[in-house]
Picture 1 (cartoon, helix red, strand yellow):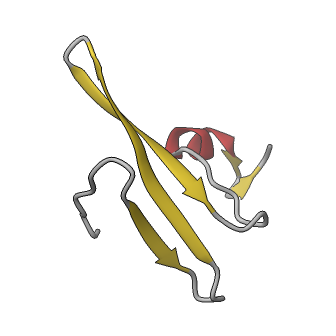
Picture 2 (spheres, rainbow, N blue to C red; picture 1 turned 30 degrees about the vertical axis):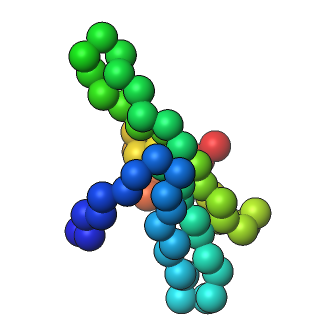
Length: 67
């Protein structure tokens, strides 16, 4: 696992093996009553599916994504 520090509005670029570029940007840092959270923006080709891990895990049935 690669761990990077990013400031607000800074991005990370992921280059897929097929040459597609996926940009992940830190768009907001929130403090909800002492609990920190961040908002991320994703810019990827339309044929790339981007899911939160808990949604992807819940959506799998028999090793295939349903939904």
